[in-house]
Image (cartoon, rainbow, N blue to C red; front, side):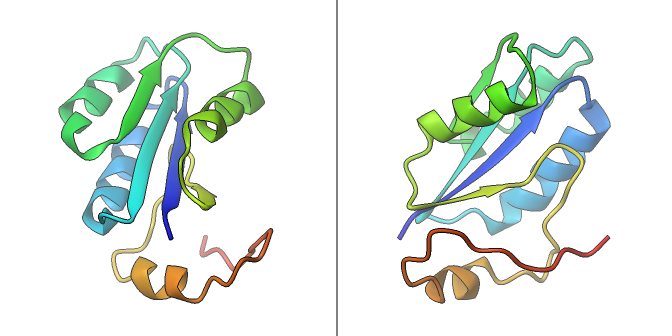
Length: 116
């Protein structure tokens, strides 16, 4: 089962950096990471390029807003499940993504607690 993690971003360089740095350690063969940037002018594309070998798909181009960016990511995703981790959000270092995905049994929607 493949998990697609999608991060959307627009002019949130520091948030994007935090997010990418939290996701990269969890990257596995059965997971893909996509970053959809809305054509940021704050250097966000540099963070994406710097980590390009760990990002399966990325684009930095103008869009018409958050939902347009999310839909771009969904169209490119190849996973059976999609997890949105938006710019500025992070995955905990001790998160066991492999265990979590092993518990999925074909549900249409999964929701869970978030830590603020």
